[in-house]
Length: 181
Image (tube, rainbow, N blue to C red; front, top):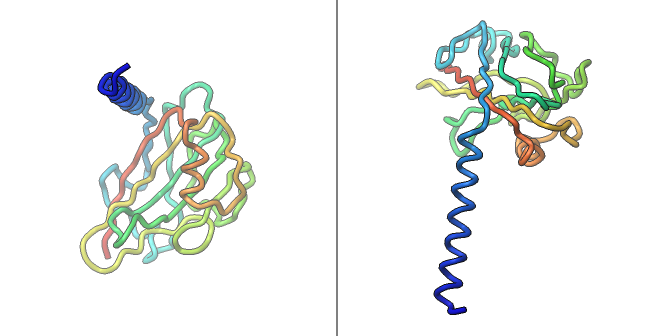
């Protein structure tokens, strides 16, 4: 076989793999996530920020697909300087769960078996919005339906959770809140 033919076959293989991966992402089921405390794209009330009680907001979701064994939720602020600031990592939420009440305790392990990871505040559990004075920051609450229980200890990082979920995400959703001081 000629070098040009081998190169062409290799390029076609790479392109077809990229197309298949894009279809997989685009065809992924969506989870509808909402909060009774704020609308998607709306302002997060002070109660859930460093200027208030700094407790987690109530969240609920619909659309978990069959086969969901656990749920993960990551909250971060992509508008922070340098990189996305991690405000909350909670994973191994039982797959039948449909909501999180407001004020989830800042414990590494919750009564239902859910585990909380490390935030950029240096602790496990929710840490509310607390941007510098100025323009509003966006806070992304990203939810994932996973086909397994993640084999991670409590206090795992966002990166650890994302790595453990890779290839096991059945569906995902997103809720965005804004906050400024």
